[in-house]
Length: 137
Image (cartoon, rainbow, N blue to C red; front, side, top):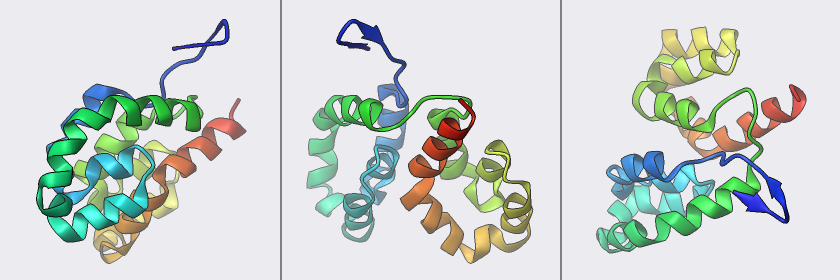
């Protein structure tokens, strides 16, 4: 991505966005792109009764561009962390990936803090990664 003569890496990719869109009627792609409020709304309304989910098929490129400007790329890859959270979050694998060993073990032993921790991570994972990436650069 070119920003005023300067190259910046994309923090999020459309490929992962579309993979998560498959589960988008539950809001997965919305959370991925840093939109937790609409992600929660999609979760409780099945993607606004599937209508919003279908419309998002065409909105993903724009959400991807916006996310690449908002979130800082670095040591922790957003795409890997989101795949781990979405498919293995209950085991805390995304926490281990971020270097958060204690909470990773607790997630592993408690089913992601009885799923409440998973919900918290869906809301805050992008910010958690941005903070780690900022601190390590």
